[in-house]
Length: 121
Image 1 (cartoon, one colour):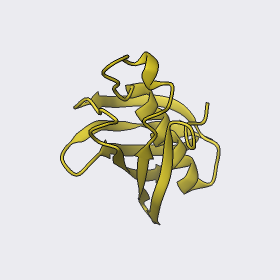
Image 2 (cartoon, helix red, strand yellow):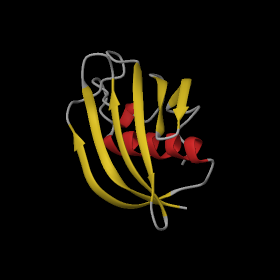
Image 3 (cartoon, rainbow, N blue to C red):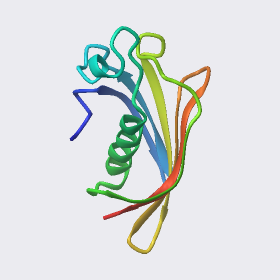
């Protein structure tokens, strides 16, 4: 399921030869939050991973599939009402079947997720 336009909106995209940075706005009215957790909604870690995948697809211009996650550290809990905008930073390296990806999801005060893995084309 594509999350852009439903769970978040893309505000800004900056790309270079090694990757890019995306600024996204979380959509607090998204019904994903109603189930995760009612009364005190938090951003599900699996949504952070999907956001990284979608941003990597924008950088590569290719449809990607998560092949192998080497590391995925959820280092803080993102609450959409407290951190309505996040920065997604991605570094790409070509790999045999796609790309090696190192990414972070953060705001100006903290990092919420550190991700390392491979995505195939």
